[in-house]
Length: 93
Image (cartoon, rainbow, N blue to C red; front, side, top):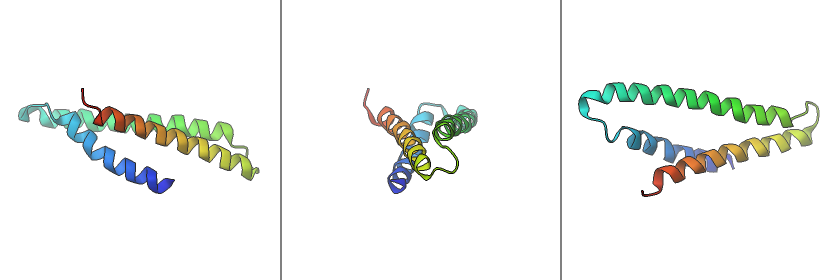
């Protein structure tokens, strides 16, 4: 499952950068890249916060079964977000 996530993330991130910066004129590319980088960092923080919150709300320390349950939900949410991003990138308008 983690291999699937890694492959999906690795294929989406370069395409996302390309799509986000495609329409900017050359003289504005440095500012656009800075805004993109800032947005990417904020989105990463929010993703860790939300998915970590789901994980820790479902996990009860000392109970192995609850760890597996929380991990499955967290990973499923993570992969779901990645699929939504992939669909938004690859769907023709």
